[in-house]
Amino acid sequence: MPTQPRFTDLTAPEERAFLIGLDNPGDGRWPIERSLAELAALAETAGAVVVGSASQRRKHPDPTSYFGKGRTLELVDERAATGFNLLIVDDELAPNQQRALEKLLDCKVLDRSALIIDIFARHATTREGRLQVELAALEYHLPRLTRLWTHLSRTGGGIGTRGPGESQLETDRRLIRDKIRKVRAELEDVKRQRATAARQRDRSEVATVALVGYTNAGKSTLLNRLAAADLFVADMLFATLDPTSRRVTLPSGQRIVVTDTVGFINKLPHALVEAFRATLEEVLRADLLIEVVDASDPDFVGQQQAVQVVLDELGAGDKPRIVAFNKIDLLAPGLRATSMPAGDRAVFVSSATGEGIDPLLGRVGALLRDQMVAVDAVVPWSRGELVARAKVAGDVAERFTDDGVRLSGHLPTAIAAEVQRAAPDAGRAAANGRRSRR
Image 1: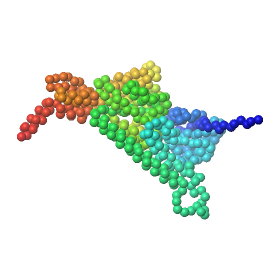
Image 2: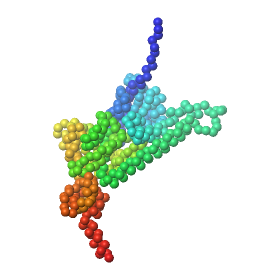
Image 3: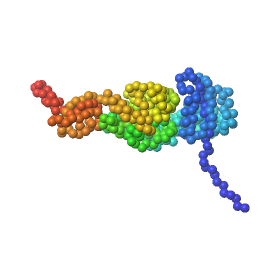
Image 4: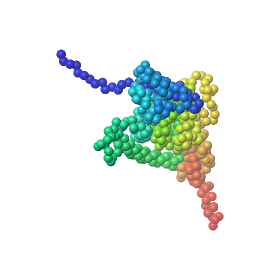
C-alpha cells in the first residue's frame, strides 16, 4: 500500500500573549487597567491573541525578574492554564530580567518597547520609514546581544582557545555599531532633503500646519477631510507612520500645507523618538500645530498628557496650537458641550462626517493671521505675480486703483516687506530721501 506523502506545516504558530505590568498609583502614570488595555491593543495590532493579564502592586520592578519572586512563580501556573507562548511586559526590561523570565517560562518574552518597534516595522512602507525603524531596532537590541550569542562567546576556554581576536559577541556588537552609523548617515541625507523642501516652502511663503496627537486619534482621516485626499486609514494603532503633506485652501483663499505626523503613545520608546526625529522635525518647522484628540476615549486627558511629554522632548511644547476634539459623532447628545474644555483654541469636529471642519479652518486662518504683518499698500500693475503670491500666502482683500492693485489685510513678514517696497509711494519716498541727503 503506497504511503501518503508528508507535508511540512510552514504556517507560523499562533502567538498567544499574556500581559503583565506594575500597579503603582503614586507614580502619576496611567491606571494599570488602562495601561494593560492599551498593551492588549498593541499586541492585537501585532497579530497576537491576548489570553490573559496579571499585575502586581509595587513601586519598582524587581531587578531580577520584574515581578516579585512569589508573583513571578505564579506565572508558571498561568502558562499551564492559558497555554501562552509569549509574555509581554508593560515596561522596558533590562536584559537580565528578560533572560530570567525566558528561562523560567520557556517562552518568548517581549517588553513594551520591542512590541512597538515590531509594529512600526510592520507598518513602515517608505525607505525613510524603514530606515527609522531599523535604527530604533538596532539601538534597542545592541545592549541585549548577550542572550543571542552566549553559546558562541568563548564557550570552550582552556588550551587552544586563547590568543588574539575578538569573541563572537564583540564582533556582532562591532557590526551593529557600524550598521547604526550607516543608517544614521542615510537618515542625515533624508534630513537634508527635508530641510531643502522646508526652505522652498519658506521662499514661497506657504504656512505649514502639523497634525499631532495620540495614535488612532484620527489624524489621517482629518487630513483626508481637509484636503479631499485618500490616505490609508484603519482603526488600529500606528496605521500610518510616514508623514504626508497636502495643500489645503482656507476660507480666506490662503493656501497652507498640512502635514500628518506619526502618532504618539504612552511610554513611547526613546529610541523611536530619536529615530523619527528627522520626521518629527516637521513639527518644529510648523507655524501651527493641530492637536487631534479622540473625544470618544474616556481617558483623552491622559492621552493629551502623553502627547505633551513627546512635544516637550522635541522642543515643540510651546508652539501655537489648536486642539481639535475629534470623533464627536461617537459621543452621546449633550456630552459635546459638557465633557470637554472649551476655549478660543478648542474646536469640536468629526473627521468622519465633516461636522466642525469649517470652524476649524476658520480658527486656523485666524491664528495664522495673528503671526502675520498688517499691510495696506498698492502694488503696481507690472507686479501682477506679487499680487498672486500675496493672495495665496496671506489673508488679503484686493481693490483695483489707477496705480495698481491695493492689498489690505495680513501677509507673512517677507512678502509683506516686498509688497511695501513695490508700492509706488514707497518708491517716491525712497527717491525723496536720496534727494534730501544730497
